[in-house]
Amino acid sequence: MKELIVEKEEEGKRIDAYLAEKEDISREHVQRLIKEENILVNGKNTKPAYKVQENDKISIEEEKPKEIELKAQDIPIEIIYQDNDIIVVNKPKGMVVHPGNRKSRWNISK
Image 1 (cartoon, rainbow, N blue to C red):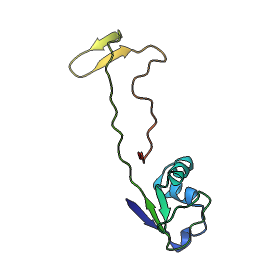
Image 2: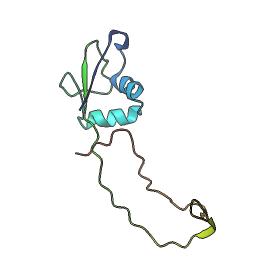
Image 3: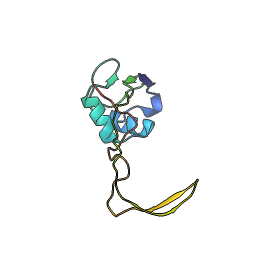
Image 4: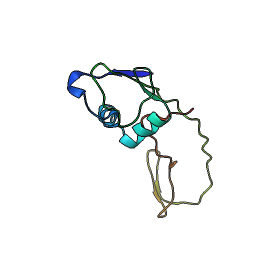
């Protein structure tokens, strides 16, 4: 669990904006974490509009990586060049090349 203590000069900011800035994540993600009760202020649930006060103790439940299963597919792809160090392929437009689930800094799984 990560804990932050609000300093005097940070007082009065909305908690969602405060954490988004402090932790470099989106306000939307902070709001989701608050709704899921993964962010507490002084040990209690809060709301995204809560204005932080000096010495507030904000607790953030850290991420627990989700297990995912990736399955290889045998897809014919045109290989333009290949050696021991590099491969150049002609990927068709729109072909997904990696999982599309956008990951955030905190992946909370309950």
